[in-house]
Image 1: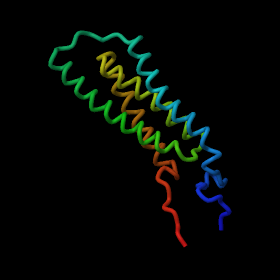
Image 2: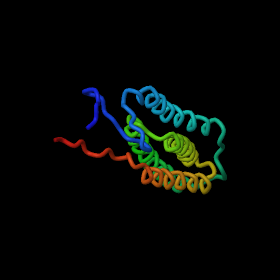
Image 3: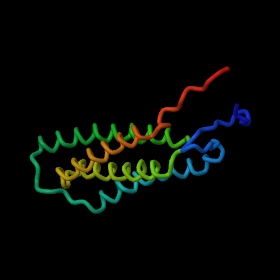
Length: 149
């Protein structure tokens, strides 16, 4: 039996029970770092990146359409990660989620600007794949259903 305070969720991480109230300040900081850092990474790419060689207008429209779809997928991934960071999280996973989100935001912005298209695409897809691998390694990514007696 658990001696939890009513309304206080408990989670077990690496054999240690952590209350939601203790994780709340760290959770808010992580969520701000995730969203603000992604915006800063995208802004930095806008300020630094320069379009590569001239691209045909039709190809540019196609590439921007594909970048728009990738931006939508990144927004969905950020929303899921923001949801995940509301619960206790191992530091290594939190750092991975935040850093990879920043990298993906910079890469998709670079794709939109048509700068280093090949490298940007590779970086974006590798960051996405590693995010999926991290999520699979996160035992608490999907919370266990509450048991009722």
